[in-house]
Amino acid sequence: EVQLVESGGGLVQAGGSLRLSCVASGFTFDDYVIGWFRQAPGKEREGVSCITRRDGRTYYADSVKGRFTISSDNANSTLYLQMNNLKPEDTAVYHCAADNWHHLSYVDQMNCQLGGSAYWGQGTQVTVSS
Image 1: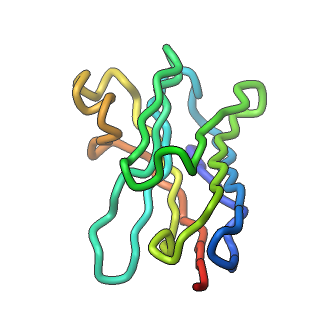
Image 2: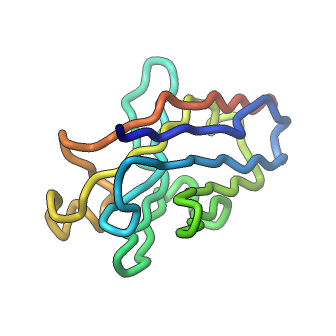
């Protein structure tokens, strides 16, 4: 059974930091594009950051470049998102997701666009107060 379990969300003041974790199980971590997505109330879901495990390429949304860092612990199949200098507009539910890179075009991989076969976690709430 495939599982993605997120943790690390919470309430933080603007300028603060949080580290999200996603423990993956039930699939081969290295065959996947895996990343973080967020959805705020009334807004569409957006890709925050992704990593293509086979070559280590990363993607960051313009809104988080220079503030967020994605990383992975292959031995423990865990994905992280270090979020620094948080802003109120970062408030959202953050989901971890993964899709086999064979299912995705090169452009989709480069732009953190996962397909219908992607696995999704339940999400963790991040709230940034001003």
